[in-house]
Length: 100
Image 1 (cartoon, helix red, strand yellow):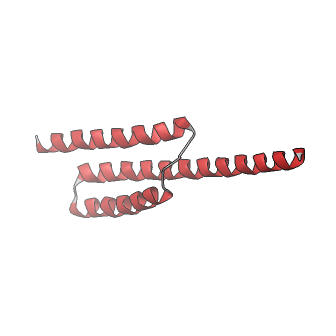
Image 2 (cartoon, one colour):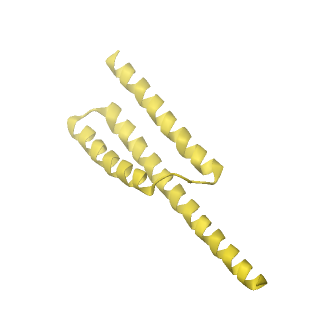
């Protein structure tokens, strides 16, 4: 029963974080999302995954490894959105200058 509670909780957590990253990707915007959130999550997930391996807790190994993947994906989405925003702003500036 203990393992079942752990795996169920892991599933809910990973599903929730995954849904948020998917929403961020699908919306095409990372407005209000700090890149430092993902830097912190990546750092913590690496540490927690290593710790979980050392103590042999497979529920937490899998959970933290999946959270690490979601943090990397979320961080890459933020980077992609920020680049697109900067590129769009530059194109708008160039367009305005050409019409002036």
